[in-house]
Image (tube, rainbow, N blue to C red):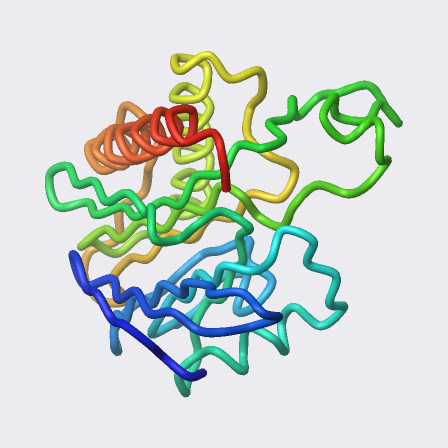
Length: 227
């Protein structure tokens, strides 16, 4: 990766690269050792020790068939999580609540309902019958506690519910986009939290931080009305 201008906020570093004739941003959150993550991302997804999270902006008409390899070419050494979005990562939103930190990139060109009828195209895509843009709402959260595997799954549920609440409150017709990605990072050592639902101590903090970040991102998206 050939970085250009570099900005850093809340430990999340933003750099820019030239690719396919466009200036694209890349976010990198370097955690270092001692962290365990759960993620739906194409690179480093699943559950296990991870040291960084990469969120790379790609062109809206992304058509490469090797997204994991592409992300790996942009990433630092070691084990980490890599995700993509067609939204501008320079408009990332950071939020925190009681020790939970969240960074979200929000693009809502094609919001979708999760339980749509089989074969029904999304309204904005119907004329061209094309797939949706790559990962337009990506959320990364870090919690300073350890969790069981079950609690990690619970945390992903809580994040998704908080995201959907934010979209409904801002008037978007959908539960997200068809290719959203999430990542939850927790400490490897220490007493394990058994629950991360929205009424547990850490789940409630996670929900509030995700809700704040996604709502702010959704409102900014509407104001800019562009990716």
